[in-house]
Amino acid sequence: MKKILLCFVILLCGCAIGFGQQSTSWDKFDWLIGKWVGEGGGNVGVGGGTFSFKYDLNKKVIVRKSHSEFAGNDKKPRLIHDDLMVIYLDTLGNASKAIYFDNENHVINYTITYSDKTIIFTSEKFPATLLLRLTYTFVDPKTVETKFEMSQDGVKFITYIEGKSKKKK
Image (cartoon, rainbow, N blue to C red; front, side, top):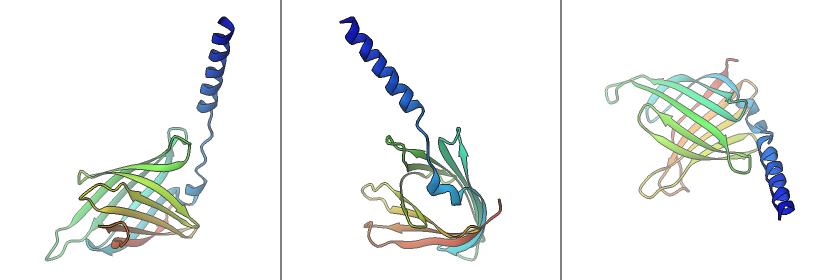
């Protein structure tokens, strides 16, 4: 019985060490890491802002911060938007999850998918809520296109805001 218990403890310790030493590969995000300045427009008007993607917690997460300002007009007041997103690993160690917070009290859980030169954040779908999609598309090492879309049915998406950004650092 002692031998079985000892084998179990050794196996459990080996598993814990293996999980604790997992290497995290953020290769799909390498081109997006840095500080960006952009301009664009959409339903909120024409505006601009900055955003950044940076590694944190010894490269266990990526933190995205964003600040945007949209000029007001006769129909809409000036809008200042700040948000924070934390991109993290799922239980298999893949960068496939994110959580988003903003100054308008929105909290959004995203699932991340990838295509050739694109990173796509899609919100969880809940009854009576819009499905949201945030897409970053690589144009060249210094340029990225961003698009934020909404959908009632998850099939037909309407662009809410889109623009281009240039890398600062």
